[in-house]
Image 1: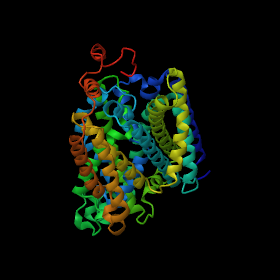
Image 2: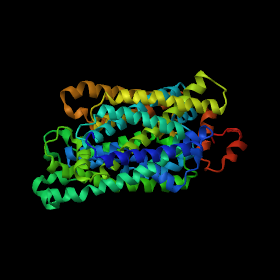
Image 3: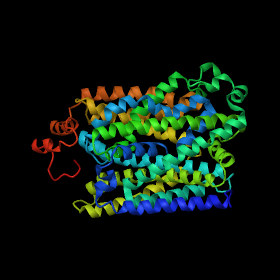
Length: 509
């Protein structure tokens, strides 16, 4: 049956029945915008940990890591491990982000800056989320195509995943997405490591691997002498630039909203840390799948199919269906989380501010549920524009990193202003466009994210400081309110109200 056994079909249907029940149960817990967008800010350590692990372990990550390792050797693991490098930074930064007491990343620009930055970011973030959603859908298509030997085409899978994700998130919002993250996270971990023993036996263990592959394929930093093409080398320079680009982009990719779901600062710090560490352990399993796949299928035209092919060949009937279901759920939960982020940005930062004002909470909640339809359509359209998960992920990283400096520096540099933020974004985008469109045509290294970010990141940071210092400072009242939030611990909101900086009726704090 389309490359799947009957028991696989039964497992997939049963799995989705469970998820639909969870979505319906989650629906009962959503009574207002705060519940829908940030889970009522009630998530404990376990929910935060699994949300971080699950949302960070979408269906693209096993495909991305296994495909990158197939292409670059073990150095390809940095496509996931780059986040591990700035975990200490995030551990210190997360309490500050939680103190913003916002619903969306666009709210940051509304609090910190003026001059049209908030609506600009809201619109650009919707575009960025569409790219991210498209990436998830591509990943789902790649997995199912690999598992079924091409009998279920990727385009069909893209459409089905998008529709199911839309329905699920419309029911329960961030709560539903977090519950799906918990389930699919555990399943992907278990099933991924189940692939390793049979693949290990097929290649003859480490002895077989070393006999079949050159030494540089086992290096975490591929030496420059391994190839004459710098675009195909992940060395120390590439790893460093992936770290810098990822650290800046992480703030702007919608994670600010998911972080607001934690009930307090300590819960956010430790839950996020353990969730991130759990994922890095799993990454080793995905990397080994990619390394084994080089020996088993040495001439794959599309390396991103190797994870699905491994699941088809090395998992028994029933577990193959469970892998498909888990990957579906992984894609669906991430699409759901993305939809909630985009719905919040559209409803709060565009619809309620510029289109329809002063309606009740129920009206805006209904609009938020409906707004996801446009996201899924846009994400599905985007998915058909990319043929590679890796290239799609890299494009998303670039988009978010161009906005990152305005957020990161704006947290600490009091003199930073809207003109500096605009200059930072425009300069970085202009440099990237020139490098990618012109220099990249003659020299492939300028098509890589690490060479491009080595130019547009420092240029954008410099532009932010220079333009901010040469132009008029931001309004003092706006700055006082912004930094008062950052300096007031969660649970002490009465200090902001007593200082006259917030209203006691403002539910967002």
